[in-house]
Every structure is written in structure tokens, then in C-alpha cells.
Length: 363
Image (cartoon, rainbow, N blue to C red):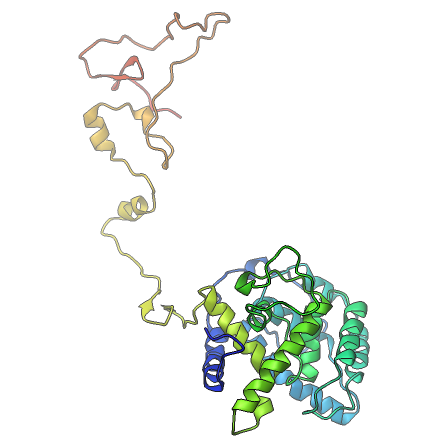
């Protein structure tokens, strides 16, 4: 992995080229079953569930916002806000309590508050660096007036308006940008300044604003080293965050894969159906501990000892306690059915001699 201060434009573009493979990979942490069911307030809109569909839609959202701006005023709909939250959770930490909160916002309130937040930077040219103080005001306005929205979710909203200047507040992007640096103006407590991939994040507005400035520095350096194409679109804030996201996923071993493959795709992970000649073989195959009844009969092991915990193996039978009160001392012998004779097929187990052929199975 290349550090932000030393990565070359070529290395950056190579990392960025791996982003689609990660997004298109099947989920490597199954958590769909725990995702809350929320009612959609946008009838007729397509339901987006997979990370690939959600993120591709997120990347295309700035075009929708720009079109609304040309028509009069930019804003987000309730449907778009919910999808941004779903995308954020699938790209990073899963917080099931946030989605119901975001969904509970009134659609008219969502449009009003997001339009007011976008208005803080509506007069700037697309390639003009925004005023960081106005960015701070817009983020605060979103966090204060929309339920379930904090600085991290607000960054996804504002990135839809200014993708080349506002990065999404992801753990991976943040930790890569400040990989072994101290965060300016942020008290990190007892955690070392060289936190790398283990750096704790408070998801505060102060952290995010420091992250925005660091992303701008990385972007400006890459643009200065690159000598062709539309540099801001190639090395903008969203691209820097996406490259950091790739590095972060690779650092924890999340390798992109296609169905039936793991890692770099060289090993197959398809489930193989094993066929057995006899049905009982498949049954025994699933058990952790399997015993052969016929062999046990030959060894004279009592039938009642077969019903044991599959993980712990056979246990020794304990002597029966006397039913009479006051007779449960060590000198009293428990009663047994039938007579016990030595050398007549008996089994000496746990200090008691029992007949293995006269006993009934335990239930």
C-alpha cells in the first residue's frame, strides 16, 4: 500500500481501478438478515439493496442534483436520503438504528433542509474550491434538522452536490488520509497519533473538516504531478476517498471476488455437493462424534451409554441414589435390577457390574 504523501498518479489510478471489483463482490459479511425493514415513502421508485446498485446510483446522483439546480433549486428527496444511508452502512459500519430514524423524516422536511444546506454553496463554480466555513454551516444544518443524520451521513449528502470537493466520511478514507499523521486541531486522547488502520474515530465535525483539508492537499499534489486529462475529475475528493476505501479493505483482507471465487480468483469457493452411496453415510457425515453400535455390542458396552453428547464422547454411568432418606452414604449400595454375575457378559463400568444384555435402553 502506498501512503498518501508518496503515492504516484499511476499508483493512485491503479488503486482506483480496483474499486469496481470490490463494490461488485458478493458480501463477505452476511448481515442482510439483521437489516431493519423500513417502509418506503417513495412509491414507484426502484428498490436498491446491493452494494453495487447503491454505490453506482450514489456516484450518478451528482448529475441529478446538478439538473435540479439548473431547473431552479437543488435538493434531495426522501428516497435519495434513505438510499444514501443504506449505501453508507453497506460501505462501512452497520448501525441498524440509523435507518429507521432517517426513514422517519417527513419527505417535505427532507427536501426543505437539504435545499437550504445546498444553498450555502450554490453560487460557486464547479471547479472552485468551496469555503470551508460554509461547508461547516451546511453540515451543521443537516445534522441539526434531520433525524438520524450526523457528520458522516451529512458528508454523503453534501458530496452529492460537490463530488470533486467533498469526500464521503468513511473509516477507510479517513484513516488512509491521516495514515501515520497527527490530526490537526483534534485531541486524540490516549490513542497514538500514528493510529494507521486502528485509529479510533469519533465522527465529529472537527475531525471531518480536518479530513476535508487533508483530502484537498492529497488531491492538489496528485493534480500537480499529472499532465493530462481533466485533473479535478480524476483526482477529486470523491476519487481520493474511493482509493483510500480500497486500501482500507485490502488492509483487513477483504479481497474482491466474483461468485465462486476467493482472494484473487484463483481458488474456487463454490459449494460442492457430496453424494453418498447410502443415506446413513450422509447423516453420519454431519455428526461431530459418531459411534458404531455393532462394535459397541461386541465390546459389551451398555446400550444406555450410547446416548451421549456428540462433542464429549461416552460418559461413565453414575450409581443410583437411594430413595430412602438418610441412606445416601458411601457404604450403602444402590439397588439394581436382576443379579450380576462375573464372567457372564457383564460390563464393569464405573465400579458397578451390570449385565449388558438384560438392560433396557435409557430414555
